[in-house]
Each structure stands twice: as structure tokens, then as C-alpha cells.
Length: 58
Image (cartoon, rainbow, N blue to C red; front, side):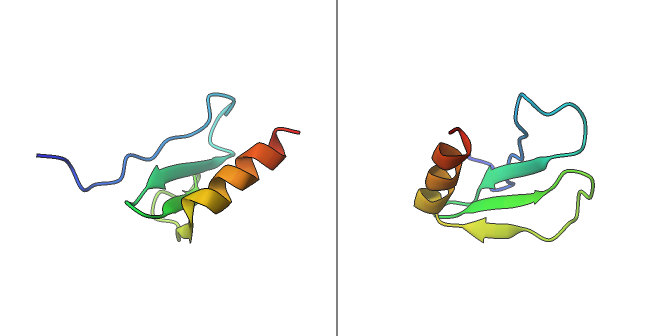
């Protein structure tokens, strides 16, 4: 059985808890603050997330 609990992850470049975490929620990407485990989650469409990541790399 596949777990429905999101697997939150941070960037390998994170040097502590001063970053964001991301998780897949099926058809959306969730983004939250690493400092607050129960922080509000912002959700974005996977294409928008991919675009943000691509632009951040330049």
C-alpha cells in the first residue's frame, strides 16, 4: 500500500532549517516553511513549480 502522508523534502543546499520544504500531493506541489512543521502550505501546479525552479537556476 502506498502511503498518503506527504514526504516533505528540502534542497540538498539547505544549510539548516532556514529554507522551504516541498512535497507532492498528487496533482499539486505543496510548499511550506521548514522552521514550522505545521506551517500553512502553499500549493502550486507542477508546471508552475517546474517553471519557478528553472528560472531560479539562471
